[in-house]
Amino acid sequence: MHKEQFDTALSLLQKLESLLSNSNIDTKWELRITLFSNYSCVHKSKHNYFNALKYVEKAMKIENKLQIESVTTRLNACAILSELKQHAKAFKYASKAVSAVKKGLKEESTSVKLYMLASLSYFSMGTQLEHLVKYEQALTAYVAAKHFNSLLGSETVSTKDLETAILDIESRLQHRATNTLCESLSRASRTRHSEWSVKPSAPSKGKIRKPTFAHVYRCHC
Image 1 (cartoon, helix red, strand yellow):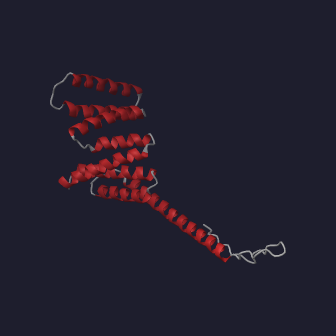
Image 2 (cartoon, one colour):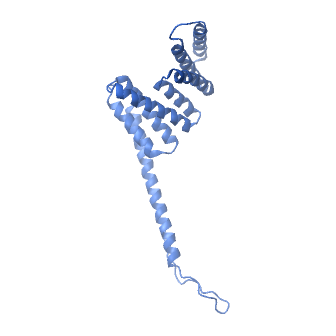
Image 3 (tube, helix red, strand yellow):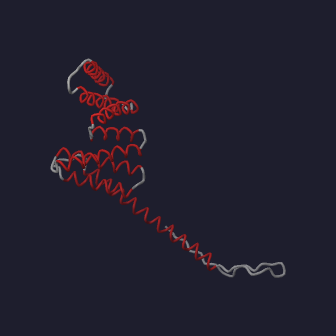
């Protein structure tokens, strides 16, 4: 977003905020949620992540008061926290988004909008789990995102991006399994070396007899 567009967007939001402050309409609080969410998106577009987080937290505070579980607000919070490298907190909001989607799907099992939100929520969860080096859980989340993507006529999350993410995670898991196997073999070889080495005998004429042989195994990976 260019500076002129940013300034215009902020000006319009400030006018709306002023109108809401002097209004007594029934939907005042719901409109404030929309207002603060838009403030957040505008600041996020300019990489003002701390300001963006401040406004999305205001939106969620009202939602909690009204007992609203907005998937999009939580996904917005997840995206902002991810940019701030706060992946553990971002994951919590992605999880809340997934929980809200699951609850919605129980009521509307064929909702296209919910399929879209499910795909985005699971993809966001997978991304944060990947940052947290929880690859098995990340893979499960990406596969779920791909499933909901396949139920849609159009892509919410790029199928190519999902497939790339899944292949990357599978590669990392394979690499981890190989490293784990190598470490296990190395530990086993060190144990065998310790058991097979000949222990020194009691001192004789001031000298200690050295072991006559030792087997050393290494894992070449």
